Image (cartoon, rainbow, N blue to C red; front, side, top):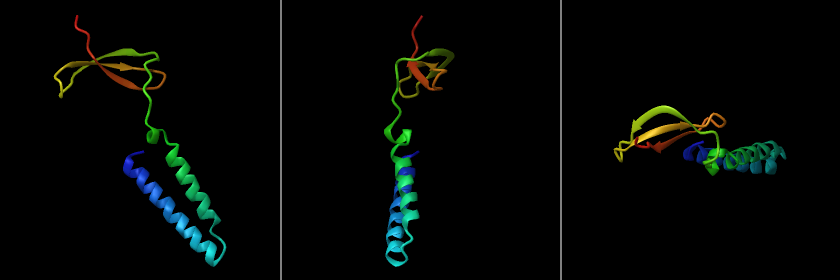
Length: 96
């Protein structure tokens, strides 16, 4: 989830809590909004993108045979792939 998506989800959860408080005060039926707000907060906080994905140097990294030019440095980079996680990694190419 993007940063703006997390912010929007948390703003929605706060609005639901406010609505739940208003309903509890008037009719006593705001518990459902509290539950849904809690689910949104839990889903947002424990989203893998929120904590950031940790790169592991371990794995079954394989060269894909792809080479590209890094436009910032001008260096040639190789693409590596881990079939277990689907992660792609870009490393400087070894010169032969």
